[in-house]
Picture 1 (cartoon, one colour):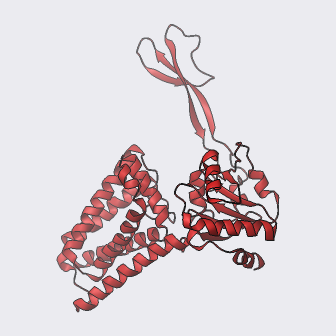
Picture 2: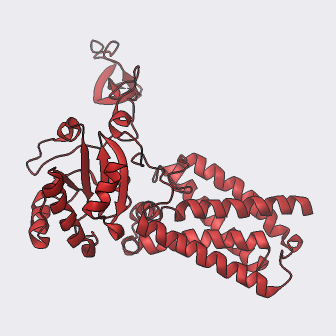
Length: 378
C-alpha cells in the first residue's frame, strides 16, 4: 500500500504542477476557455473576471501539486484535491455528454484533448487521488523543518505568480499557437495535396412510412418517390460524408470597411509587414495607444510601408475609435477568434516577412521603429 500511495502521490503532484505551469504560460488563453465555460453555464458575472480567475486557478494547481510533493498540509491538501477532481470530472463528463465545450483547456494549447479524452483523463486521475486520500497517513513531510517547508511553499507561490503575470504582460514564454515566431502562415493555410479543401455533404431525403410511422433516410438515388401508398416525404437534410482539411490557420481573412476581402494583397509583396492587432477596441489597453501611434507614423514615413491594423470591432465603431485616439492608420476587419490566436495581447504588434512571423510584442512592450528595424536587419 505504501508503494502504491507514493507512486500515486508523485504522479498526481507532477501532473498538477505541469498542468498549472502550462496554463500559467498562457493565462490569457486560459481565460478565453473559462469564458467559454461561463457562457455555457450562463454565469455572466464571472466572464468579466475570467483573467484573474485564470491566474488563480493556474497558481492554485501548482501549489497543491507542490504541497503534495513535499508532503505539507496533507489532510487539507488531499481534501482539496478530492473536491477539485470530483468537480472537474463532473464538468468534463457533462461537456463530453452534451458536447458543450469541445476542448477543456486542461493543458492549454500544448496538448489538445477531446471532451471524452478529458473525461477519461479525469477518471484516471480521480482513481490516483482516491489512493492518495485513503493512504494519506503514509505521506511524510520531505522537510523536517517547518521553516524550510514554509520557505519552499512561499517561493513556489511567488515564482508561479510572477510566471503567470509576466506571461500575461510579455506574451507566453513558449508559444504553442500556429502564429508562433518562425511559422510561415501562408504555407500553414495551404491545403496539402490529396486533401479536400471543403467539407463534402450528401443530400438525404427523409420519408415517413404511412403504415408503420417509421422514419427512414434515403439518398437521391433510392428514395421512394413513386411509392406514394407507403411513403411520404418528411424533410430534406444535408449530411457530412467527408470532412475537408482543417488548417491550423483557417480564419486569416482581411476585410476593409466596405467588406471587400484584401487577404491576397497582404501576401502580394515579398517584404516586411508590420501588423497591429487590437481585437476588441473597447477592451484594448489604452495606455499603449500613444506608442502605437508613434510606431505607425515612423513605419509609414521612415520605412515608407503600409501598416496593417486588425480588429474584430465593426467598421463604424472602429472609425470612431480611430478619431478618438488620433490613430494614423485605418482598421481592417478580421475574425475575433483568429486575432486571439494570432497574439495573446490586446493590443499586440507582429512583424512579418513574406508571410513568416519574425517577432511579436505585447501591449506592455510596444516597440519603437528602431527596435523593429533591428529585427529587420538581423
